[in-house]
Length: 144
Ligand code: ZN
Image (cartoon, rainbow, N blue to C red; front, side, top):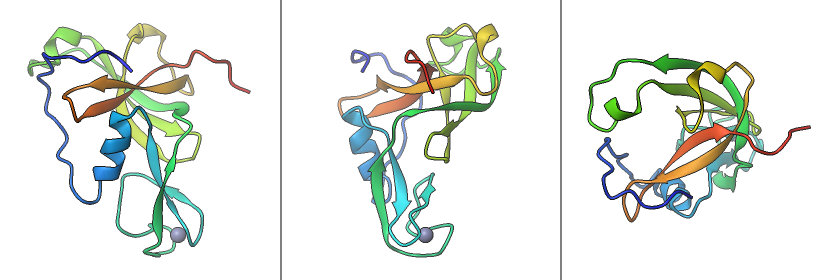
């Protein structure tokens, strides 16, 4: 986990009863995804019911925190505070090993080197004492 950033100025997520578990785990360095206890399938973003079978028996499971770039774009213009200093940066949709897709920036990477199916792993940027934002970085371990 990266060290605390006292100067984090980007918008913060609004947590609620549906997402508190996700954000609490993220603050501990764990990436969670929902898994249906009835049909065993995963889903993301968090919902109170299974999008596959409609069951209300939804639980959280720790993700491997690894996946592949499904698609991405390189942002060259964003004047918003906190973003302007990172230009150009990569915004991506990541397909996790669990099969769900999650949005997030890929950091610590040359934007020119990012490609579809590039292996990435979750990393967390500490935004406040209670909130760490899950982002992505190139995977360091080789994948089978
Ligand atoms: Zn289900």
